[in-house]
Length: 336
Ligand SMILES: Nc1ncnc2c1ncn2[C@@H]1O[C@H](COP(=O)(O)OP(=O)(O)OP(=O)(O)O)[C@@H](O)[C@H]1O
Ligand SMILES: [Mg+2]
Image 1 (spheres, protein in one colour):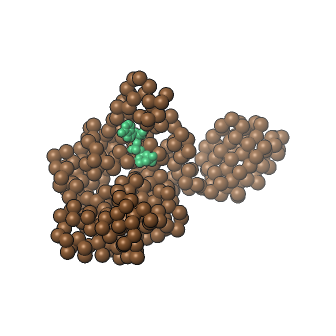
Image 2 (cartoon, rainbow, N blue to C red):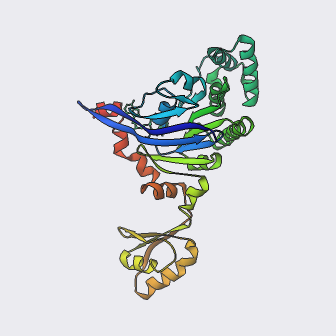
Image 3 (spheres, helix red, strand yellow):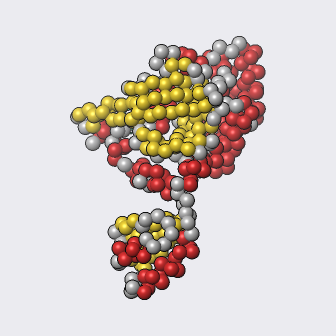
């Protein structure tokens, strides 16, 4: 199978100001990425994980500090033009100008890619149809809904029919219905045109619903890779959380039940087990027998957060609040 992305040790460090001193911040700490032609790959991670930085390197918008990559058959360092000609890139905030009519914006983009006028107009018509924007062609970009706007962004990235398309957070900020609609468009693009797609997201459900394969990035490193099923299998089973005054006693009892080794955190005990509701009566009987009363009992199906927790040892929320990531924002650094 043809490889369309091969990256080795791709890394990027930023010099960020922190108060008066400057400090090196490692946004991407050396990632290896392999993507074959026709794959739909999700690049999943919390805010600040390094998704956009990686994407900007792979699309020649940002020079790597270290590492090599071949993208769409061209070397990132020696032939960035070749890479650019063969990829589409849809950035995190979109590229269309607010005052421009939708149709004009697409035609202009097509002309920028060197299509003659007649062909640019034909391609624009095709894309408006494909992305259900036919009725919006004469409207200005600023009057579009969030979902229409995002579809226009994608259409813009496709005018030159690139075989490889990069999308940065395609559905962030969309309501559930617009998101489902966008997924449909992305799926169709993939199925009907065989376009290879590499998209970033911090939604596990998005990666799950859309992608053949997921790479999980955290703090600039790839911490897991696999099909959605493979990743989910790592957190199979329910999470049981029991609060008690004698958590060690509870943990001792839970250790005899099927499932993972229990973990004690303060007065709570957590463990994963294939059937949470099924093991609970035995656990509570055991606690009763030794005179330990439960303060709280909870059984949870694996959530998206649990997947991330299993992979990184932190919850998504903790990861996003991590000062190691936020400290790197130059604007914040200057204000401290
Ligand atoms: N130009 C820059 N100067 C300094 N630090 C930067 C710069 N760009 C990114 N960073 C830092 O690099 C890290 C990774 O940022 P990046 O934008 O790649 O994350 P992300 O995974 O795309 O996050 P999000 O989900 O919020 O878009 C962050 O700590 C960020 O603050
Ligand atoms: Mg980003």
